[in-house]
Image (cartoon, rainbow, N blue to C red):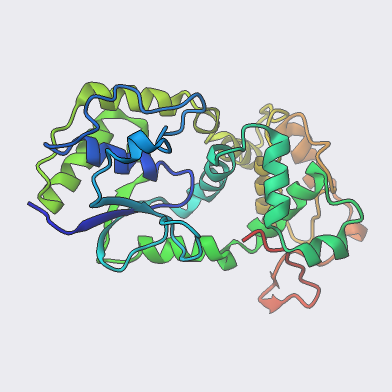
Length: 308
């Protein structure tokens, strides 16, 4: 039986707290087994009451990828690690999970206020006369996606995912009961935990996850980009500003010197995007100030406004 601490390391919103709960409640002597529904009204784990905290196994912990949190959710040196991994093609999904699943982000207004509060205030004040706008939030995410390799949170998470000493549990395991069960069985075998896996409870959890808006829409941006590539018509007017920002970023990197209009008055379908790209006038083409590199050269006009 494994005797040292185990800590789940995860990017915010990627169900790390749930994995910690599932490991804990599957332990033979767990004090959580009697809790049939651990989710609150926002489909997050209801873990903050004093009575529930007393039930947690002190050796099964959670933590985010960086060491800056003021609470106990930072990586611990004396714990074995389980890292919730994902591919770089899932970066947008991971960003949206954090945005939509962070406590107190239940409305767009609360999301925007928190994002703006976390942004470099000097950059905001210097570049935006009125920064309290979803237009500004979208522009900040375009800057972020253009320079994603330099995001502190992304760098830290990539380092954890590439750490060969850490056990990996893939994000996609949470969307299918069989994959979730198999993943927990692998954890049990690797750490010699003797987990008692409740398939019915796992099915309840995957249903909860798959009912979440951010999960149901996780492929929308990729589908839009594929439709543009295939010259196909697909509705895209319902995309949120984070998906819009990501799609514009990808296309600005693919199409030399094309700049999408500032703001959130967006396209209704991919036919309109294709027409915009194919008819973009040459005299409007110039170096994009939010591309850090251009044709292998460092962009002297590069702007960046850090969210993290």
